[in-house]
Amino acid sequence: MNYMDQALEAARAAAEQGEVPVGALIVSPDRQVLAVSGNRTLGLKDPTAHAEMLVIREACQKLDNERLVGCDLFVTLEPCAMCAAAISFARLSRLYFGAEDPKGGAVENGPRFFQSPTCHHAPEIYGQIGEEESKTLLRSFFAARRL
Amino acid sequence: MNYMDQALEAARAAAEQGEVPVGALIVSPDRQVLAVSGNRTLGLKDPTAHAEMLVIREACQKLDNERLVGCDLFVTLEPCAMCAAAISFARLSRLYFGAEDPKGGAVENGPRFFQSPTCHHAPEIYGQIGEEESKTLLRSFFAARRL
Image (tube, rainbow over all chains, first blue to last red; front, side, top):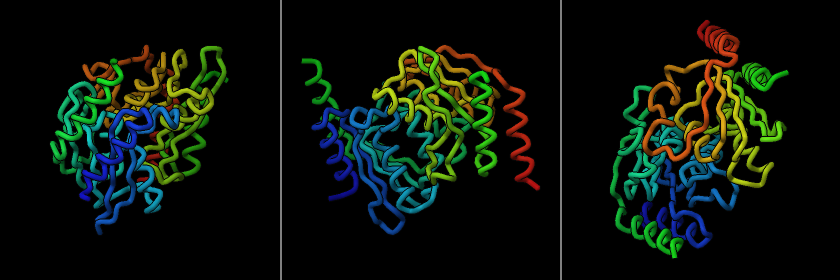
């Protein structure tokens, strides 16, 4: 299973727990999966527990380093401003994301954080990876909530 | 000691541990201090461990709720994009900050997150509280590092 498929699987598992279905994964320079997680804001009662934040924190613990130089992050949805800034602070090398998020995203939308003069490290960015599957997951999750 | 003075004390304690001297505190609607912390990115080896993030997470655990409605956050430096977005997600009511941060701030500088159309909750904002003491702390910390 490729990295984005693993992130999508984490998103699906999050939805089953009633969490917004977003999943993320970090891979090391030697292609080891360091961390994979879905959103857990409700489960952990922590508004900062987006999938990206959880994998960044876990990967840092695993490498015993507050920087993830050479590591790549895969996430099923465009990161928000919180996660984009955390990606920058962690010095991640590449960001692969799925669906765009016009309402809350901060990469292609809103604050476009990586293009801000106050952003001091930007990863290489690859969007629309596994986009359709990510969108379908989010749509059916929110559709079910509106019933 | 007022809330910002307590946050400044946490900033000073952070500097003694070699951390960038920023401190934060959250107070509940009934004026109880729920959490106070300095930056701990190096100590915890966690790039997300800014003072604001740590107090938000601690206060949420204390209230057993992922939202901090009615609570106020005091921080000695203008929050970055990560922390500004987390403040928004946590639904904090008021943000009091010390020194502006032209290099990394996201409230008055850079992405001005709370004014972004992708920001769905903004606190009331009060800047320049304890500003001089916060600036002095940061200046002497970075001056010592450059020796």
